[in-house]
Image 1: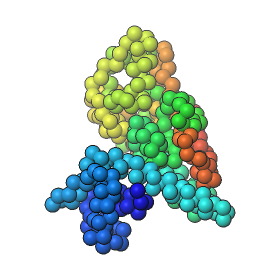
Image 2: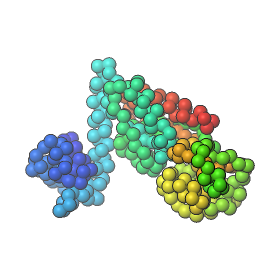
Image 3: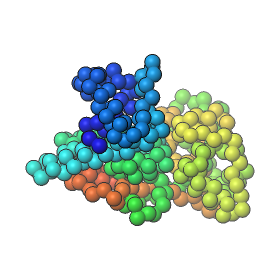
Image 4: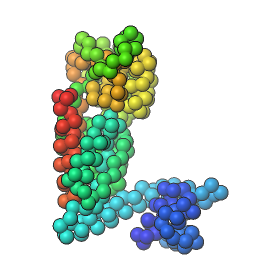
Length: 310
């Protein structure tokens, strides 16, 4: 397969249109169509379904799109390594962040990256653990921050922080109505067995927090009473705010809300639920000097961001 053909295919598939892709790539549309068709002939499979609305990847096309993105990313990495021989830390670094941390560290991470790696390009992707794992595996991400990642020969893992999950509940209406912006009120601790009796709003499996909560409750002979399954941090907290149930999350997730008065926090005991925050990268791809520097930046930013919650 020709790299240019892969690049052309990826762009068409991402933009969903030969017309838009030809403009983005600065290539005539008939020439673009001819290159995609040559790729399909070589692979003996249709990669795109062409219709009046544009072009949509077939099942084979979806598979090539996943691998094609990884191939193109690794080509960028190779160019960066060659450029590093000239003494400049440049190239692109792609980092995955979980939604619970994205708002907290995106700005300081970007600022420090620009300060220390001004010639490099930073790409930040927000997503849940399963998607981040897959992106690491195929090479679309250089590194990602994950919760409770299983040890594997495929990954290099640095544990950055251990965080206690807390019960986040709606505050009394009188307190929530106060115009004063203040941290969520802390109340008396609650046992995990008591938490198991409450209506909980949890993300669906295989979310790392969901798996951890269920495992801890199973260990004491209980299971969570799930009121709602919601795959969105802000959506979960908004529902808690409206009194629809309770959440079990790290306390720093409330940083997504400017006014945290509508929430109360309770520490959980017997047992505590401890979550590990990890920096993960694939062991199958070599580190460039730029990536090594970026890893140190991520570690420094995360450790600093976690200090108020330690």
